[in-house]
Length: 249
Image (cartoon, rainbow, N blue to C red):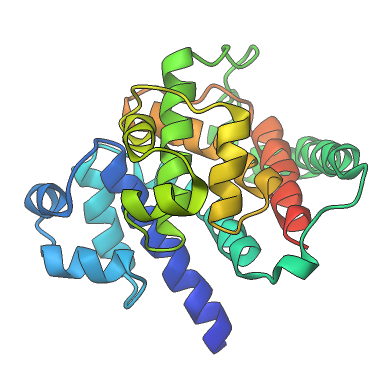
């Protein structure tokens, strides 16, 4: 792995550690007590100074009652977000019509999975037959949306290793408001999110594209499975990641 790739992975894993802790509004001390991982180690992970091993991440996920597979689902979005935040401002800004292209990418990925991948898996792994849930995804609940938005605020702040006070100073949003967002007591409006993203030097579209992953993460941590057929889930992931990548170009 190249040094740049190592830095990106260390940052993404650090953000994942922050997210795991933030799912229950825990301090580093509380996560350490629940997981058995030293607080000093958790601090190093969140500062991107060292990368947690997979067994350590599994212990952290188990401590917050999050299935390991669901924790892994958000990693591609975190990697893309780190890349987006690291690009010079002069290279940012997706061209017009990107959303349509992203939707087309998502549909193509879903169709390919449905027509090629799933038949292969069902042939060689029959246990998968009938495994996918039927029916559409249930509408998102407002509480999950507020939680996902709060986690996004935490991510934006953590991308710069800022305190709430520092994010408030950079964005012009009151610290008490930022605290309320991160505690899921209030939901920031889109314009407010755009100001927070701009302060953290993240394209707003790239920040907003991460929200579906965060919503699923909250659901999984509360024991609610995400009822989306596999092909549609892959298509949605491809569409979202395409939007994040293009927003940072």
